Image (cartoon, rainbow, N blue to C red):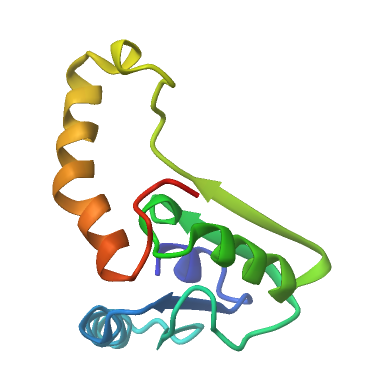
Length: 128
């Protein structure tokens, strides 16, 4: 909604598989008077939009059931000159690279949130 407010001549679509999150997003957009954003329930590998200018994944690709499939689907949904932006937490390749306060938070969040979400979506929890 921040982008929709900042760029009123553009259109924005938010997609999530969780119905209640989409309901909340719609309610908040209506309350804020945002008219150029819409929200739909869909899996990241099955939404129907095509010929998009931009697709953004904000801290979510890593815990999807099929992150590679989501990336492939995004590529197919983009215009030929479209762009995909992926923002993910930074983590080192070796465990010892992450033994710092932020790394500890990431490991805890990963164990409690990311892995269960991936598994609940029939994913393989990071091994793609």
